[in-house]
Amino acid sequence: MMNAGVSASPAAVPARPWLTERRRSRIAAYLFISPFFILFAVFGVYPIFFTFYLSMYKWNGLGDMKFVGLKNFELVLTDPTFWTSFFNTFLMGGMGTIPQLILALILAVALNSAFIRGTKFLRAVYFLPNITSIVAVTIIFSGIFANKGIANYVVSLVGLGPYAWTVQYWPVKIAVAIMVIWRWTGYNAIIFLAGLQSIPGDLYEAARIDGANRRQLFLHITVPLLKPFILFTTLISTIGSMQLFTEPYVFLSQGGTGSTREEGVTMVIYLYSEAFKNSFFGTAAATAVILFVFTIMFSLLNTWVSRRMGGEA
Image (cartoon, rainbow, N blue to C red):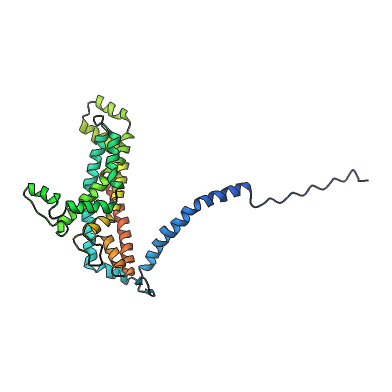
């Protein structure tokens, strides 16, 4: 018979399993989102680090890689064609970006007004160029800017031309800039329109009661409240202009293995030619690193100037 004065030993507490329900849920969640991060690491992050690594090696794409330090950067920065591509990129970028943003803002204000009918249809029409194949668009524009094309006919009406749009220095840049404007104006107009529709109508009504005219409404209400959208479109357009490739490449019929015309060569075309025409992957990688640095520098400068123009310290 058990002694009533001795207490029974406590029951052994079972060990808590490592794979709890909470951890199982977390692991399942990470497994579901892991394909994106794996693909991003393979096709996004790895090429960036490999480009920095390759920029310090001499490599033709097949043989052994030879370490050359900063020699590739020296070769690129002392190549006159690179600096031609640099100035071409910024000339065509500026000629395409500034007018496109102004036109996009005007279109967005027009679409946001009560006097325009069929705004939904017009939004689709304005966005259509952005989803059209760049190659197809460039081929069509090649016909427009042919020697006997519409462009030369139009300029002849004012006593100018004819121009060789695919050969001459400024006509090449004007033609490429027009293609860029045509493609991106509608896209930016839709972004501006979204910004305009987020501005409360009460502000306009109060300003009208105080006697403000249309110009004052636009300058003192629309532009300040649209500033985040203007900054965004300016930044995206600047980055896009530095990656200009397809329009000048197809327009100048540079699909062969011959030399690239300097009138329309951009930094990305220069990079492409170094890698896939000359098989100089080291200098191509160095060009990509330089382009990366320039993109960051001009994006920061662009943001700083935009904020200063908006009155922000």
